[in-house]
Length: 98
Image 1 (cartoon, rainbow, N blue to C red):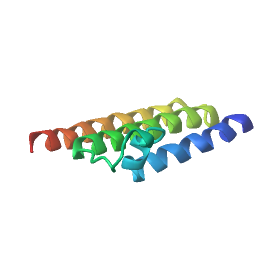
Image 2: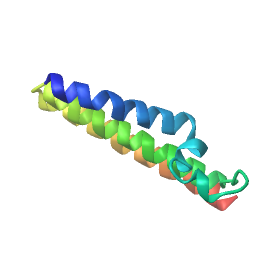
Image 3: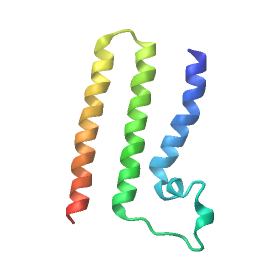
């Protein structure tokens, strides 16, 4: 259990950083390819934030299922994940239609 938490903390940190700084995370390891700062579309930024949110949800589900052996807790988080996916797709769909 300790090792699981120990390895999850940097992954959570990376996902939180990706959510708050999507442009920087998209350039991670590839900045040398550009002479000037590239501009990313709002769709790409939104998709990066959406993907990091899903990653945080999945890690939370995995971590909570190892802590709690109650199936209702896992069901609650999975329902939350589906709601987040539906909301995120709806929000991204609005950006595509603009």
